[in-house]
Image 1 (cartoon, rainbow, N blue to C red):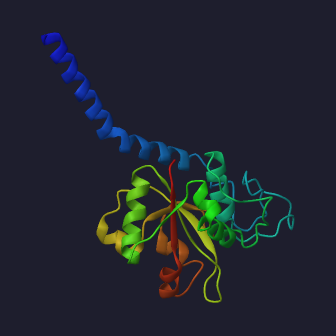
Image 2 (cartoon, helix red, strand yellow):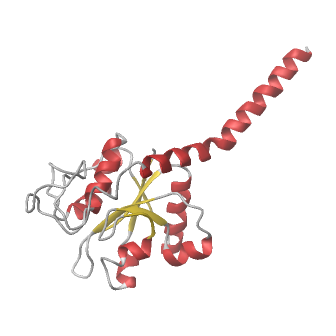
Image 3 (cartoon, rainbow, N blue to C red):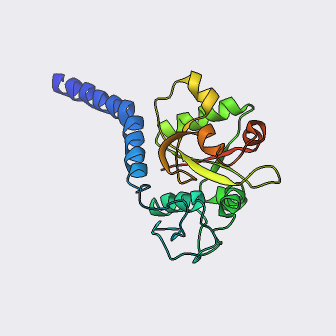
Length: 210
C-alpha cells in the first residue's frame, strides 16, 4: 500500500517537473538552433549568395546583393523542416514580400503558420516575444509598398523587460544591412524604413511550432 502511494507521488512530481521545465527546454533548443547559423561568414550583405546555404557566389550571379533577410529566414525554416517559400520557386528580389503574402495565404495556414493578431502593436510585440520564449518559431515581416521597403526577420527568445519591449520591439536574429544575432526590432527595421509610423502600421507577425 505504502509503496503504491510513494510511487504515485513520485510520478506526480516527475510529471510536474516535466511540465514546469518544458518551456525552458524548448526555448533553449530554439536558441541553440538559431545561434548555429553562421551570420559572420554567410548571408553577408554586399555579396551575392546562395539563398539556402548563405555561401558567397560570384558577383552578379543572383538578383540581390545588398542584404539577404528572406534567404536567411528560408534557410532557418528549411533546415527545421518547416515549410517556407524560397528559391528556386521565387527569385531573391522581393522574396520577403512574397514570403509574407504566402504566410498569410491559405497555403501558409495549411502547413501550420498562424498570424499573430492583436489590437495594438505593443501587444503584438508582447505576444511574439512570449511565443518565442515558449520555443516557437516567430517571424516578423513587412511587405514592400510605396512607403516601405520589404524586410523579414526572426524573433529570438530573450529576457527583455516589458518597458523596453513595448518601445523597441522584441529582439531579432536577422540577416540585414548588418547581420546580427540579437538586435531590437526597431533598430533592424529602421535600417530599411525611415518613418516609424509606416513601419509599425505594416508589421506582421507569424508563428509556427518548432
